[in-house]
Image (cartoon, rainbow, N blue to C red; front, side):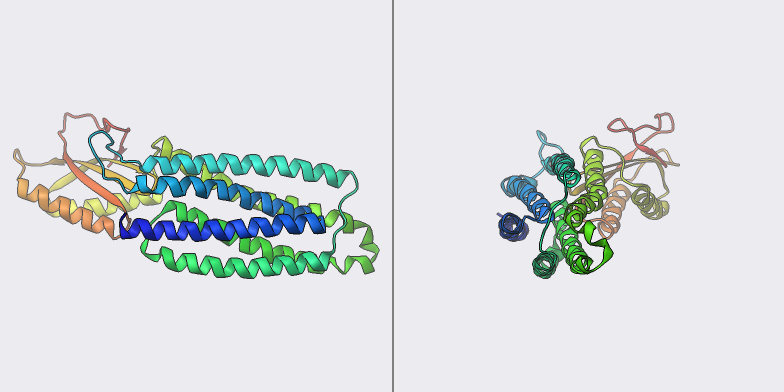
Length: 311
């Protein structure tokens, strides 16, 4: 096992144990307090644990070398797992939200607002600490999985402090004419949390779908690759014809098809240009490889592999 692989697994294990502790605490608290917002949080964290267990067992595959049998390695498995996670989180969100809305319509839910506020404040403080530790450990890594985990802890932090502030404010409702709203505050907060998390889940799901089906990356990335490629190839009198750019998990694959103005191609120039363009692109994107492929004017401007992007 490589040093990078060990470091990635250590970060994932930290997230797993912290998530397990949080889920247990939230579930126990939801039982004793009757808080549906705490139950929603516990369900989310439990769903995350299932995902992390999958990744912990599959992480060694991401470090296996590329071979003729597996030309893209096992990087696409990571995208598939992220897609499964996205679908699972959406399913959990809709099912739990429907249940909470049903309970709200049947009379709401009475909870000790100050008790919930303190509990969420403690969770938020712990989430900040865990996020900070994971962020430091991930500085030398480039893992979509850990980035997804960091996003989860960031959302947990905002969620916990937001709920703490909201419940603290709601504790004063009992002394106002709005007292009748108190039973509906807890289920309302649970639904608001679900609604706030929905866009992030959808973005993660769409990004994973794009990777699995080998869709082109975003336009900003395409423009960066085209700019660097043109600058590197120009001194060698190579003219980019079209670009084949795909992402599988954490790895970026770039093929630049180019034409030449002369009848012959110097191997030394091709080798030097390939080395230079890989160096330049590695400064922009971690875990990427670029190949230069000579083309001809008669060759159609379409990548034989995945459609390509015209230069």
